[in-house]
Amino acid sequence: MAISRVTIVGAGVIGEAMIHALNRIGLQNSEITIKEKRKERAEELIVRFGVSNSELQRSQAILLAVKPQDLEKTLIEIGPEISDGTLVVSLLAGIKTARIENILGARARVVRVMPNTPVLMGEGMSAISGGKSAIGEDIAWVESLLSKSGATLVVDEELMDAVTATSGSGPAYFFGFAEAMIEGAKKLGLKEVDAKLLVSQTLLGAAKMVSESGKDAKTLRENVTSPNGTTAAALAVFDSNKWNDIVFEAMKAGKERAAKLAN
Image 1 (tube, helix red, strand yellow):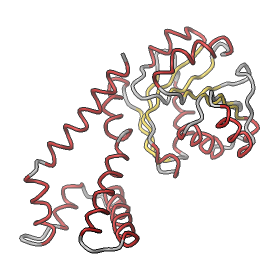
Image 2 (tube, helix red, strand yellow):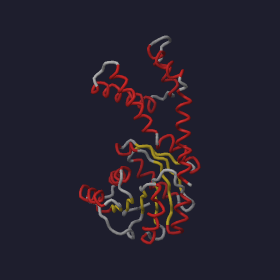
Image 3 (cartoon, rainbow, N blue to C red):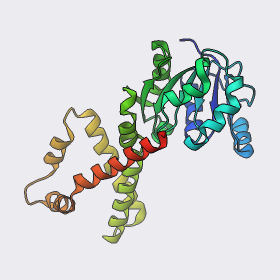
Image 4 (cartoon, rainbow, N blue to C red):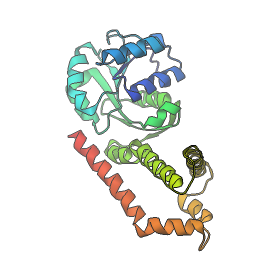
């Protein structure tokens, strides 16, 4: 599907990441429009990237990256500018395609995406679901866009809340764990700069092993854990505090919150 003009509505972290993603698939910044209610933020991106701040009528695709609570107001404002058959890609957590379709009607073909912040580094994870009016070419274009900024996965929309709790919120879980490890290392006597290097490279290497070694996480964990060794002693503390249960309950809470956002 040939799309040569795109508007990004909402220019926060994900919105800015989408500028980079569009560049990676060959769109020039002159072909990208942004709409952002914060005047200073809009001016910042216009100056930095050379994107425009014009009307939506010429856009063949619109990427929605506003806050979920701003959805209705935003769609009511921009709705009259959206041409019939425009592809609307929602990057909003918890918002179902039907909710957008009900507001915009037949003017839009809606695709829902749950990205995560590592798209900023070109290492994101984005799950994709098509709405009732979306066609295969729409899904293919969105996959093409987001595959330049990490991995993609097409899922049934009913699974999107679970995706949100897994990969959408997932980076924060790892950031929190890294933060705790760095603080723990400092308490054990390491300098902060050294602790950060040790933890960040350890997480990076471990993630690469999960992704590329061909072994599952359980096997990799067992390979590091010698009986009665240092790793076994550390993991025993996690197990005694029901580590798996804590992780599941946290993810369940995230999934339930995503479902509430949808309503």
